[in-house]
Image 1: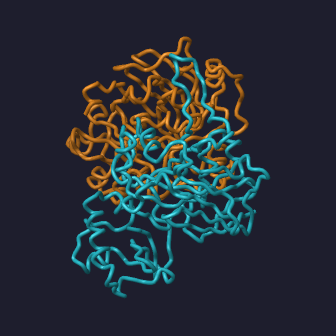
Image 2: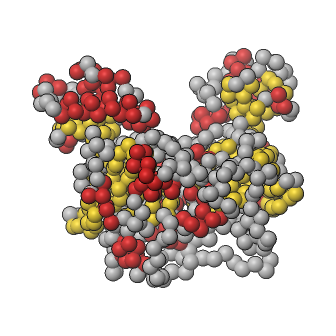
Length: 308
Length: 317
């Protein structure tokens, strides 16, 4: 399934995308006699568990050849939103890029043995859910707060069932689905505050979606092409295969000690840095257009409009 | 007022007001007394989100209750002695709590001596976050799971609960956005905190954020800098330091955090720990199975949490 949150005539609806059409999943379910257990929006559907997901799948297959204009619209006639605002911060895997030939191995902090474990290559940090942004809406920030804003394309991982002390294969089976995200952050704020979450949490710094593609339609999340286009020119191109830790490995590491819950969203990391260490440095500027694309998942485009 | 979420035995979570040594069920008390606070939202986050008029109703009920003797016939129905109730996590915020790193010079200097690196005062406040799943209430267990960490440490900190939201808040107006104060133990897994460089994972293990027992409004804590932070482990004082020694003050923290980012009602901002954590000791000492950790801030209260090692048979399940 390809699920989304959309609106037509003002009210937000839970949608499923079928080709060039989107259906109101809840109305379609009602008309085909399916009970979706009181689910009212996409977040609740993700949290509702496998039985309800199967019910939604039944609705989608039942109606797919027989769209009723009472609950279906051409995609270009509706407004697509971000899927939902997560209940807690989005967890981002930082430094999750395997070294390219000739590049040094990732830095690990060497600490005295016996007292400390060796360093971990991945740095985990978070993004506030208040940063969510719809496709097409402007990425914005006060210019007096930061002048070094950059964007990276990300595979967003949506958790479907609890993940706790899971091994990578087991963790992968708890994933509900995947989406595209643009991770917007500010290098000067990272440096200023030492730790990174504030830099990536400014309002509008988390465009994601618009669709969540369920796991069954993404057989291999470790081989997806990832791309960022800035004003139509490709500025980052890579693959989820470039990640040092795969989706399952990231979930396994973070769930060692931290319960991941249905509806949680994580980001795998960028295949290549931009801005930070990029030569010449290219910061986002007024009038830019940013598009993140992941093969088989979709793409999201946002204009850039900083304020004074 | 001293507002909380509490539970009696197996009862449901209830919003409470601490009156002297008693805890009063806010809604039932208000209904019994015909007080306007009866119409307040049923949960503490709802009350905080409802804004100043709602808070004023609760403060007014608090004054009414404080100025009279609690009727004996209400005991066990809408009020209890504090030792008869369990204080829960006050509420679950809608995003991760923010935490300020390195906000007390002596903690910073002692810690750097163990890394070792030269101690440098951060030129701006350092903010990281803790997972919501880490929040636990009073008398809940701090879990020590050896699969995740071997270096469990305590950090008592003052926590601000944001009342009125806002963005780009001027320093001079920072204080106006405080709903109240509570105590937090920013429990830490040091090898994860340092090994991952970004602190999120090391600060977010399950149960690593004891919070409460109550939230005290500025009316009852006019000067938060006069409070004292104390941590005891098995009765031994490990941290004791004035809140007021912080490098970046509350107004400035709120202002800086809100730059370009909307602070929302009910957001939590944990303001940094004081000297005396286990990491600073020589040799370093880590929390052990059955240690009793007391997280205390004067005028707010004490959280008592016992460290429990996950047993091998539980781990196998």
